[in-house]
Image 1 (cartoon, rainbow, N blue to C red):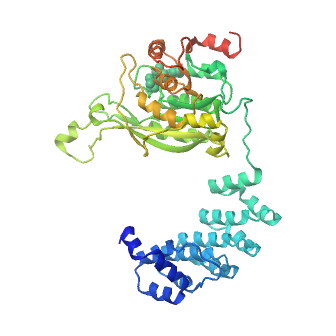
Image 2 (cartoon, rainbow, N blue to C red; image 1 turned 120 degrees about the horizontal axis):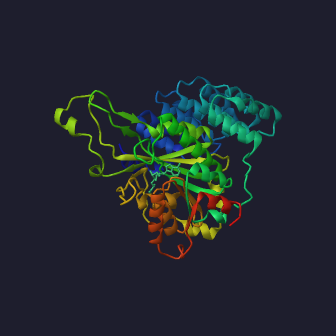
Length: 470
Ligand SMILES: C[S@@+](CC[C@H](N)C(=O)[O-])C[C@H]1O[C@@H](n2cnc3c(N)ncnc32)[C@H](O)[C@@H]1O
């Protein structure tokens, strides 16, 4: 029975009657299937202390774990310390972790000092979610020195989420900003400049915590002539060095979005196989190690007609193992510079007016699948579609922010930034692409791109600028 049919059959009035008459509730439960019992348990609402526990306690031996868990959840609403032994029993012996977690949560909801020894005991549980619920219950008594000591012991717990929670509770919010600048501001000299040179050299002169958002598509390993490396290891090491610096120059709790996809190096002859490199998956581990927190994976989907066809052989012979799907996706891996502070903290660093001006109004993509046509450029062979940059900038930055692309190519991100009243900072190694950026930026109209606002610099000029010498 679906929920709309159920809601007609099991009315609010019926549920109220069952709540007020435990005999009627008991006989009702005897005749119903699991779906209806679950529906009623979910809809019970508030339960006062005088409410009869019997119907719910009867359900604690039900064979369906969802029914047992919901019964405990409802019993917890009564906040009766006499139920402690019932909750302890189910927290310790029930075979379902769902029920055990609910029982520990119920113990915590009692907010009674008598629960302290039980909750301390549950800190040794094997299920990290049970431990987490026990921590939650104990935090109410964090003034108690025994509780504090027991929680401190978890600083080296094997589970990373438990370690993080305890670390925050014991040591408080730790991040110390290395920048004197307000969070919503960035150094003037970085605004709307394109620097020609190797990003590894240029970035050394960028102060810590200057950038609000980085969105980039790194050179693909040996796929184009601007991206030749001796080995895959050398390529990954190069990206690791650059992204470590991106981490340094990023402001607290701000985002880094990386567009990559696996690439294929074709076979040298029919006697050899081609090799596929899983670039996003190889980059991910070192990003986490250097202090980026993984937030989301967005899949950019292109029309099949726009990508290389790998299907021709299989289409003919249909032999298993030789299947080669056409690769229509690229990844947008979304990371945040790790901090104890919540996203709300970042938003609060902006004036109400700026937040209002930056709102993403109207229709927007609600899923992590972004269907966007690829873009083509007469000079550069691998450019971002403008729409991709527009979305990333709107979702992950505020008006006036500084947006960085270390591998700027034709500078699509810069154009999008100007259109959306953000500032850009671009670096690009190849002169021909820097010239392309110049041509493209000149086409951007609007108040934000007043004549002379964008500047093009060589590395030596940028160094002087960073030192305030020009
Ligand atoms: C995939 S393309 C980026 C395209 C860009 N997203 C666009 O919309 O045009 C990567 C770019 O990184 C540049 N590049 C490679 N190594 C670099 C380095 N060490 N420093 C700066 N740029 C570099 C390449 O010249 C290339 O233009």
